[in-house]
Amino acid sequence: MVVIHTTSKLYNTLHDVMENIKPVMQKQLVSITTKVDNANSFAFYQAGTTNQGTRFYWASADRTLTLVGIGETVAFESDDNGFDAVHHSFGQLLENAAIYNDYEASGTGPIAFGGFAFDPLKEGSVTWGDFPNSSMVIPTYLLTIVHQESYLTINALVEPGESLEPYIAQSVQFMESTFQREQMPYLIQQEEVAPEEWKQIVKDATEDIKRGVIDKVVLAREMIATFSENIPISSLLNVLSEQQHQSYIFAFERGMSCFVGSTPERLVKVEQRSLLSTCLAGTISRGQTQEEDEQLGSYLLHDEKNLQEHDFVVQMIKQAVELCCDDVVVPDGPILYPLRNLQHLYTPVKGKLQQGYTILDVVQRLHPTPALGGYPVEASIEFIRDKEPFHRGWYAAPIGWFDPKDNGEFAVAIRSALLYQNQATLFAGCGVVEDSQPEVEYEETAIKFSPMLQALGGLQ
Ligand SMILES: C=C(O[C@H]1C=CC=C(C(=O)O)[C@@H]1O)C(=O)O
Ligand SMILES: [Mg+2]
Image 1: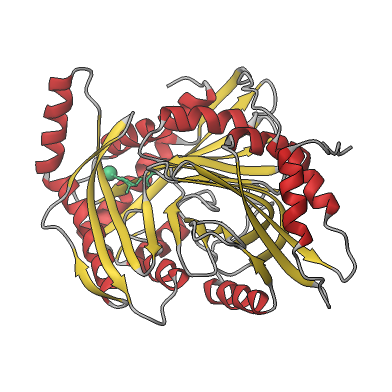
Image 2 (image 1 turned 135 degrees about the horizontal axis):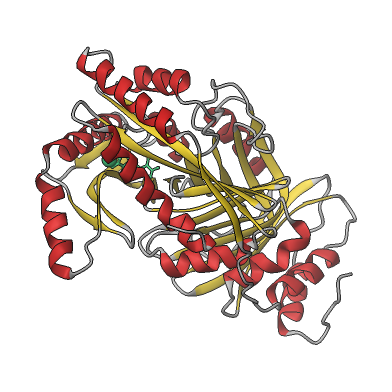
């Protein structure tokens, strides 16, 4: 039952705001944003447990923006990767919407959050049964924390004469709850799926590369971890955000499943038409001492195999961005991007997005980059579709948000797991090029499981 705190400051503020809203003449999306006292994103997410299956969480890698959504006012879903259809439906909905937002703050108002499948042409799987190939959602309750300022948005489809009182009461309840970090349940079993078969596929790929069929392909594998109880998602997000700096923290719930992760890989960010994409590919572990760490980093910066892996990504992203941007800037060589468990090669790509293009157009052009698919793009996707013995679902695919002003950001959902009750299916992949050795690539994917495994309390 929803308890109304009639004495609460937030309740009174929301009431004042609602009183200034014009009555609707027909069923209409009404979006109301108000500034609130400093909020805790994990508390808000946890308070939404009653709405499990419709929540999402997003924190940008630099933690300047956090978004938490509860409830689903509108969902744009389809079984192909309908980037255009999503944008079109979003635009149509907003034409008739009443938006009350006095703030310029990013990520407030009727934003859409969600993602896409890696390959909509891969046949469906039981594991990903709760996830359509594309789903972008306008949440009913949205908490936005941007540059330490907090905002609450209510997005409701309102009928003429309908009272907004229940939305006020529910918002107050979500906002006034406190976060309780729960213990992770015990790990009962941890199983790497078919490691020897996977190494054989890596070998087959290197042979195809030597024969010139493809130049690079990213191959992934799965690990299944079973726990004593269901995994508490808000606590997992809290642990991930403490452990994985420089990484986006995300969760997207559908039905009984939740896709969660901490990815360092930005696909694209657009802010007032300034575009930033990122090439992140090429990997080595972290050292035990600073000296060892620097040696490893320096090795990575000069290793031909990793530089080649990285360069396929830079060339493809540069080409795709040049087709829709002016003033494209790409540095000459990569720098290191250190994370808790490993370090990568990193090259930013910047530009000015031309009029007429939306962030979803760019997502469509970039996905999958050769950091997730391979090169050439089509041939490598076909290799993955035929040879990988499992369904990637949303792993290695775009996840993120956009707003009515076409600002937004999408990351690529790696270092991730699909949670279903007391089970987590983890995914990790690596770029295979001509000189790849199955055993070394196997070790690389083993380290890439660590961010999720560590947060879940599993064995490394
Ligand atoms: C596909 C993954 O990583 C990609 C991103 C960075 C570095 C990569 C690499 O060095 O192989 C991969 O291309 C993954 O973590 O599952
Ligand atoms: Mg690699």
